[in-house]
Amino acid sequence: MNRTNEHTGVRGWLLVLCLMLTTIGPLISVWLMAHQYDEFAPYLAGSAGLSVVIFVSLILTGCSVAFGAYAGLRLWRIKPNAVATARYALFASLAADIVSTVIAVSALPMHADGPLLRQVEIDLVPSLLFFTVCLAYLNRSSRVRATYLAEQR
Image 1 (tube, one colour):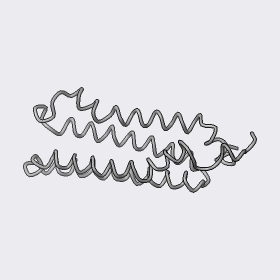
Image 2: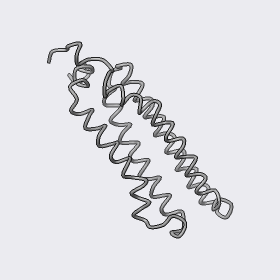
Image 3: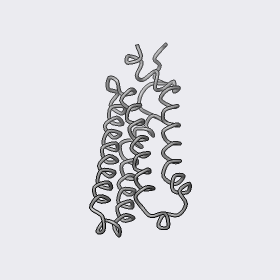
Image 4: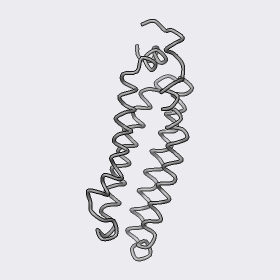
């Protein structure tokens, strides 16, 4: 494959992905974590177990966000194994979102959250779409192949 200036470098959709992983995604995640904490706050005083579970969920989410930011920086700086790291970070983020959603759905009384399906749709559909689009982009993009060609060998 021939590396041309047109298809190399962190520009276009690759730059958007880097920005999503390093800045936009973490900002959204912090807002969502604060919202999740506010949602559970009325129930925390009555249950020490719930407090621990929510704390674990927030830590898990925070770690996945930090790993995503690390992966985004590796992509942005065109480091070795950056694409593989980004793939792992996407999988970790999706797994954290699934676990956090299961915790949220199982920890709150049904009357507080509404129907189960609606909660799953609100929490998981955006994550699943982001994961699918980003993973497809990393696997099929000519810019990604050209920019990270050395790591593909």
